[in-house]
Image (tube, rainbow, N blue to C red; front, side):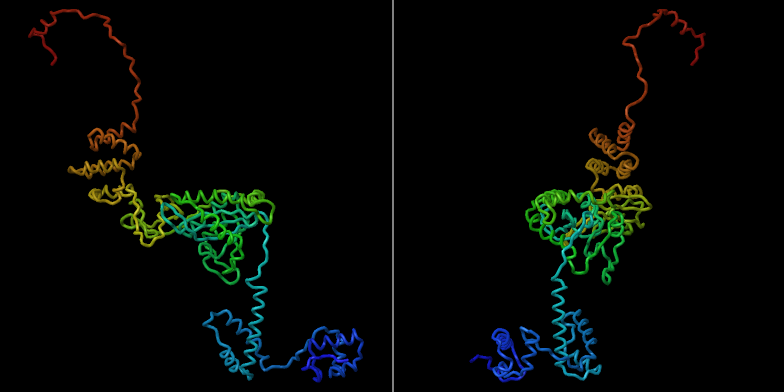
Length: 524
């Protein structure tokens, strides 16, 4: 019986491969050929043949004997070095040659090849670990109703006021029902974040028990080791107000809030790309709110039955009540300049003159600025937010803040920048009074009436005086008193239509003769 065997295996004692093992198994188990005959045909020893047949092996496995190496005492040290080097940048890592030299300095007497082989095995094991437990592998997450929400920022473009603007979009999404809310702002600041969450809770109908955030600067002042975070004081106050716990993701680990991360991508394709132009930012946010609610009914939930809107309706009962909105301002300590101005974001805002050169607190809201001092609100201005660096700084004046100054310095009224923003009637009166001597002081006295009387009444009195052609301080005061005092409250006199004499006069010309008598003395 002639059988073809692998030529390189025939006659080699103790060596066997997969093809030869398959032949031996067939001869012995199927054809019942004795081991002695198999020995003669293959040239293998009977002990080798019996070893593989007793083990019932179907493939060849060679056991590599463990041999001691000179690198074994340094294996732990070398592994620690490799872990440290893996955390460095590519240009800052030590080469294997350098590591070998450092090991030699510690007493290693082996070759460089042994160290290089160890490094290759360590890197291969690390790659396997990353594929199985690293960034490429995730665990599906499930949330209970009302358990958590996720928040994130994104940058998107829209046409507002005829200009193409880059806006900061705040995305808030419920983790269970997947209902989401988007609001647009010009900046990513604390006050914008507070307003975005307050509006999101209003639209969603309540507050979940936990919020999931990344390590944004508006929430985290410093990232510590592990999950340790130094949370911003105002952010912590906001979370305490709404009674939700805060969870911060690991650095560069956006998958820990993957729902809102995907919402950013979906909204960019399905909402922002089909967005019409708007006159201002409030109109844009109103459209975004309506569009988000509309999308709830169009998107199937995917895990729960029905749409996102139906899942949100069921989850809404599990949310905590919102209560009153958080007073989401950021406070800055400012000092009022001698020109009665405070500076914020390259712009200037006026403050009442009585607080010039004094410290005040500036409370910053998304759309306004409030100046506070001594426990009272001094004034309020609409906030100017400009992202362009080529836009010059602006000054926002309230001419009423400078009335105390011009009472001492009436000459400043002529070219005072704040008084260019007075109502039209006041400016017409000023142009009329400044043409005559003493008109500056007279105009100052008229403007000072605003401090004691309603500005609308003073403005009406000035307009009446201009219409009557008597633009004087006295006439304005007269008209103002008539407007403020109202009609007379004296009792009406009921006069008869005609007077009737009860005793007719008697004609007696002798009375005149008696008056002509010189001897009669008269009272003079």
